[in-house]
Length: 149
Length: 149
Length: 149
Image (cartoon, rainbow over all chains, first blue to last red; front, side):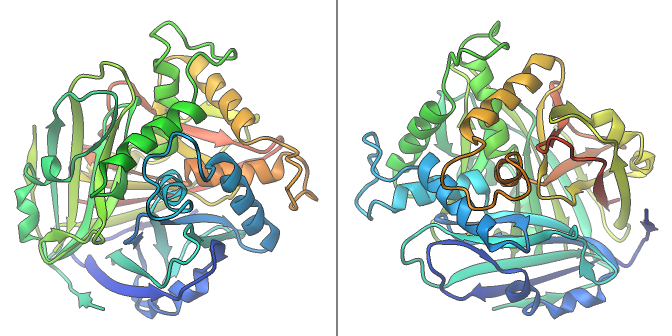
């Protein structure tokens, strides 16, 4: 258990980074993100907000070892957010488009993660997942905002 | 890509606002919220936390142009969070009540969005959706908290 | 409606706490969390980030009175995130494991809640739910980070 209590030294840091284009599905991107925000090492205690500027992709946290979790997540969401549901009206951008919007809202477009001693304070098995929900999504923009001391 | 790094000038701002009563379904409320927090213009870099104080409504981010996305989201959730599931015990406030609680937890009651140069740093196609999950939800209270410089 | 505007006095506070082991299902943990972060009383205005360091549990907000909402949530997710789906590859840690990962991502591992006058600014009916998605999850670690004045 750690307790930190500070005053008068809070800072705000923000950077827009890019995630390279990826295949449809889930991808572990902890290192791709951290390698672009090395400034986090200066923060003793704070919060990192990681926000993806798209409505057909998502950010979530899940298991950082087994690649089958990535694949099973994709299969789950493909079943429970089906393509070509008969009631979809928003179909003119392809059968993957409306399901991508739904997955993006269910999983979320932002993460708020504690920072402790210059690192994201993730659990042993936690990693950052990027969900690419379009068949061809291209590169994706992410804004990282850090507030802390 | 922008980088901002600041110290000693962080501020916290908070305001409770009201969203007018709306029909059941999803509604684009970016402008209804922004028009009530004009103080955001003073913030160069920070985070806005937008929190809805209810358990049968939700806030999420999705496509800000096509109104059919709003309707398709409602139809999706009505199918995958059904009313009158035979195993519901919480039924005394109406058949729309327990599904509203589930939708509220799946979609979430708060958003954390980066602020850059006095504006929410949303993607081109991103807007704030309010999900009214009750048949007659009435007006809804939202707390906006901004931390930044 | 309240407006607060402050400068030069922002502080960051962080503490790692433990939630006692609980049965699979949803549990109202508002008091178990608040009793471990009494320092919140010193914060006039700010944000509390509550982050669970696990990938098979979740934190969400829902109804704080009726215990049947807790049970109905569990039944809903057991149906719509089934065990033993034929397409799961990640099965070697038990039939409850892959569904637990999915539920954790759908519901989320963190909450960002406004603080006003020394208290979490929750709605009248809002409480913090802990979702234990493993059959035997054990105790769970949570990091609370508070930024405010």
